[in-house]
Each structure stands twice: as C-alpha cells, then as structure tokens.
Image 1 (cartoon, rainbow, N blue to C red):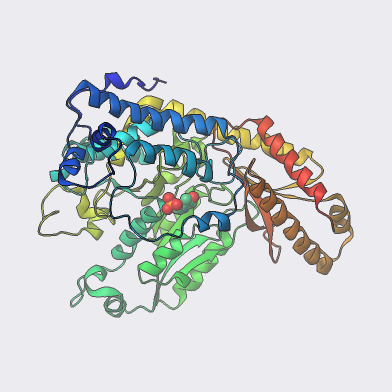
Image 2 (tube, protein in one colour):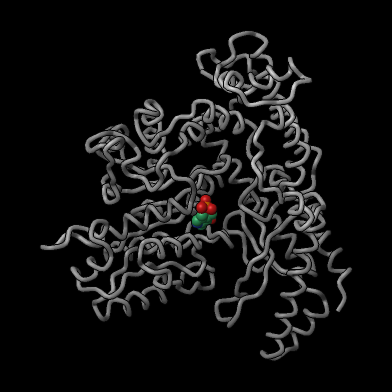
Length: 565
Ligand SMILES: *Cc1c(COP(=O)(O)O)cnc(C)c1O
C-alpha cells in the first residue's frame, strides 16, 4: 500500500489553489481595525497566493485543520461530550445574519476545532461501533481538499473536462468489479459517449432511486397514443397498458430509501412490498414465489423490480442473489441489488464469494461513504445494460444538449462534485488488496465479537455476522430463567420487559459518551409474532480490536448492574 504523500511542498505548483486567507492576512496587519467587508478585501479572497508569505499562511491553516482536528480525534477517545442537546440548542438560537465580518479565518478555524468538533460525534473512535459512518483514512481529507480546490462540476464537460473522462474510467472499473465482462466490452464502453455504465450519486438513497426510476420507465414501452411514463405520467401509462398497480418487491430488511423511491416514482410506498425473511434472515424464497404468483393472477399488476440486498442495513445479511437473479430472468423482472453496504466486499478475494450472483443484477447500488471509506457524501449506481440510463435522459438548452457527452444528461442529480477523483485516488493508494484487508478485518472481528457475546451469560446473540454487522441483546439471569419456564403470553410480556432494559442500556451507554452501539427491532425467529429490541453493531473501524469490544460489553454489564426492577 503506497503511503499518501504528506508533504504539502510536493504539491504541483500548477494546481490553482484558492487563497481563502488573504483577507485574514490583510486583517492581521491591521489587527486593531474592526473587520469590515469592502470590495478590496473581498477581491483578495479570490486571488491565489503569489508570494512565499501567503503560501506559508495557506499551509499554516491547512496544518491547523489537519493536525488540530487530528490531535483532537486522538485525544478525545469519547464518542460525544457530556452536554445535553437541550443545553446545546440554547446556544444556537440567534437567527440574524451578521452584517459585517465577525471573525478572521484563523479564529473561525480555531472555534470549529474547540467548540464544534468536541460537540460533534467522534465517529472515528474505535468505540463508536453503532453505525455505518466511521473513521476514514487520513488521506481522504487531502483528496477532499483537492476536489474542493479544483471545484469541478461533472454535470457537463464544459466545467469538468478530464474529470468527466476520469469518471467514465472509474465507473468502468467498478462495473468490471461487479459484472466481469470481457476486455472488449470495456474497450467499447469505457469512453463511449453514447453509453453509460453507471453514475456517481450523492449516496445510496439517490442510487436506489435512480435504479428504480430506470426500472419503472422500462416497464412501459410506447403504444399508439402513449410515448413514455416519463413524458405522459403515471396515469397515462397505466391506461395505455391497462394496469391497476405497479409494485416493487424486497425483503422486510429493505432500506427505507426504497420506500421513498416508491413514493417519488408514483408507485406508492405501500406498493413496495416487504416479503418475509426466513431462518437465514434473508428473503424467504417460497413466500416470494407465492407473492409473485398472486400478483400475476389478475394480470393488472406489474412488478417494476425485485430488490436483492447485499448487506442489509440492520443485520448485514445477504439475500440469495443467484436464486433471485434466476427468478428475475425467468419472470422478466428488473433485478436490482442494493449493495450500498456490501459492494466493496467484492474487493476481498476471501469474502467476495458471499456476493456471488450480483453479476446477474440489472442494476447495483454501492455507497462510497460506507465501505469505500470516503468522506460524506458519495454513492454509485451501475447498470448491466450500457443503454439502461437512456431511460432517464434529460436535455437542457444551455447544458446537456442532445448528442453532447455531458454526464449530467443521465443523472438524478444536477451539479455534482468529482467524486470519482477521490475514489480513483483512494484505489491507487490502497489497492484492491488494501480495501480487501479492511473488509476482512471487519468480518473477522465481528465473528470474534459474536463468540464473545455467546460466551457471556448476560448476552444473547440475535443475528450472526454474515458480514461485519451483528445484533444481540442483554439478558439478565432472572429473566432468562423465567423465559425458560414461561408460556407464550408470559414470553411476550418478558420480551417487552427486556426491550425496556435494552433500550435503557443503549441510552445510558450513549449518554455516558465512552462508546456507542445502536439499536433496532428484529424478530428472534421468523415464526415469532413480534419484534424485540436488539443492540446493533457495525465493525468497520480498523482500530476496533477484540479488547475494545470486551470493554464495551463490560460497560453494558456494569450499566445492567445499576438498573433495578
Ligand atoms: C446506507 C444504505 C442505503 C442508503 O444510503 P445513503 O447513502 O444513506 O443514502 C441504502 N441501502 C442500504 C442497504 C444501505 O445500507
């Protein structure tokens, strides 16, 4: 793994960095004067550094940001500072915009480091294992700064040029990681301006919406007096095709962005049908088949897409992708794989077989700000068919004209950052192997964690880690004994009681600020009639060790011992 180049002096001089601190420097020299906004000062904010002195100032501020924040993140092992939200919000009541400048850049940075950072959540802490947001490699901050400094807009070639070309290359690399077509295919499409292998998005939500938008539009070919659902709307589409209803199928573990897509696309989020899961906590294939058969019966319902999950948000579980792929092929249904979380597992030789079948997908979502460890926010969507995105193509007179190569023609988003620059650089620095190692660390540490939970009398593992996510719950001794002897009515009551205990433990631990796990609700087994509260952990920080996990469990036992009932 190549070390990131840390020496700012090695920055090529040709990169036109903005100089945000010229105004501050100016103010430095006239320290006693009040800060004012005048044209001359403003103008200087936009001039790039000309002399050694201004360069030094620029570097000084970058140092303050990189090391000030980094020191903070190292020292501050806690997850949050002990300050209540109510107390915090009282300091954020003023709604007047200051007419004149209030602070110099140096002071603003200092304020952010001393006032904002400690009261933000230290998601980089190895004790922060509750969510899919975590530590990022150090060099990501540099790459993000470059992206900001270049400030390209990949909506159109005129504001991005090489970044549009680079984006197509990175999209093709990822497409190949998923679909594994031969070299000739990628030679044809990598820089083909008439086709698109995918698109960067602002995240998994917009990636899923894009995929389902394409799937919906594909459903309604033109008829005599109907052109497309995009043009004529949902009502005309249903009439032209003599339909009552369009649905999307996904397991109960589907991400809520799919329901948003249902709402936005006019399908109705009630028609995003949640199919039960089976003993493996993945979609129940028998129930899925039965659902499809029932939907087909009246001939007036059409299935826009079946979504397979590759790394469910709550459990990390992967649906049986090969079976889902075959089913979709048989039924002619658009197969979307939501691999927002699990996609990068493809970079681990050891665990990529878990995602076998993903190549059968018509479309795939992968988030960059999850297991590609990129800073907020970036996601991606991929299509097997290089023409699929034509279904959502839009043109405008001033950009994205017909026949142009502008990437913005086939995206949900308008203006967009050049996220491909960051992903491409990260892949160069880490290599597939580097990412693979992080994936393997997460999965293997989660497995060790599962063993620890099973070995402790006061805990029950609820869902095994297929990937690096697992759920469990705290189980006091007396309740465990009562459960063993209880009838079904008593079991329900005891579970409600356990819910309250687990909720309290999660809340008290979060508020103490040393560590963080999240919570959700799951069924203990598919035949259970109700959900129970479970603690949820996501092991993605390479600094999270088995010892730290023991400490987190110890703390939960300690909290339990302070609760009385
Ligand atoms: C996180 C996630 C999403 C949504 O992604 P955002 O980047 O938060 O919009 C969708 N699907 C799955 C499986 C996810 O884990």
